[in-house]
Length: 550
Image (cartoon, rainbow, N blue to C red):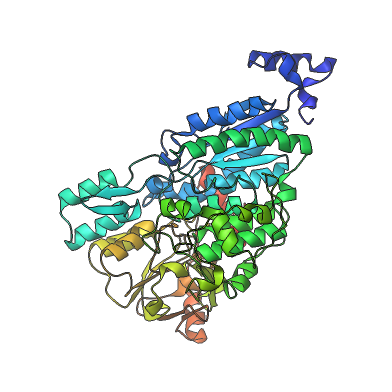
């Protein structure tokens, strides 16, 4: 075993002494050493129940004959970090998490890992580490929270019950007392926020990749089913160590393609473009943004989950979850990929029970567009992304005039002061991986747009990111970003912009000669942060079209 390097032989007497100080018995020195990388935090609603799940995983490991060790990794709640400078740390934390898991597992020569995750950047960070380490690994995602209810409104989510509710209040649709009631009741339990936002999208794709057990992604954080999945994952990791089944055996070109297809069919978070590209890079797998673009022209959506509909993750789970989706996509997916459960997709879909009213067969979905898309044009030479599932079909072609802002805060002030009108295209720039730094999410302005009734009459374009909870005519990840001299930096108020979803194009309606003249007057970008983690990140991060790799 890999752990023999810290526990076998006379020269390892000091090491065994230290392990015994940590509670390892002499008898268990011969057991596989399994790390439980836990992102437990009292700060993050999706993670506050992880102490119980740690115990279940630990019980499973010891039941199967392993020795468990819990260690911590950082977790950030994007909802709490949203709308202020703290959001700059969210995407960079993905690489920090990967480094933490890699460092602990390598320094202590662990034989296997159970990665206990849930929220937005933690899951992809852990998967990046799993591929770097390439030791037997299982992911347990803690699961979604329960739906909220308030004053007769059911299926409230973090978005509809809080972010968008602010816009409704500003518009005069609800009273302050009503807003406070929604604030208190929109998130009624622990768990990842209730829709197909980034956390739940990444959990679903982790299951499709084969790195977690069936139904792990959609079973609620407060369910006994999740407790059982955690226990079974603990048992199964010992089996994977014995069989030497590694992440590189499971995460392959074929399973990554399956994940992209499923992402497009579900209309998940646009953040998955960043994360799947980064995961592929960690595993040396040939996946590029062109694969997303190609498949988005071939695959159509089969089901819309909040924020693209009123269905929540609770509805999705009871409709059959990811096994039901794989059954619906059975003629499109690569079915012989491996899984940590030692089952392949053909095995899983045999027992899948789908509510076809919610998750219909692929050819009976009624949708014609992919849930996500990549757009190209003079405004985004290297591409940008959009959540097609969150755009009303009547808005698939949109033309408007630019209103430019060099930060999220400036755009928010304009929205709050009612300076944004129908037909405006809000440009938020210098918020990319380098410009932000950290590529902040823009849920606050997008939710305010929808809440104020402008979701179908205004567009928003940014070199930053969007939350998976974003809906409306929103285009993100514009590359090249403004800080790197991208055309988005040259846009002026009043410029015409055309977005064409069916043809996957985005054009600034300004001639090349005018843009060349503007570029001569463009000032060189200076980093906003001069020291600390973000400064280091800004100096090393790549562009969004390659996964914002560090």
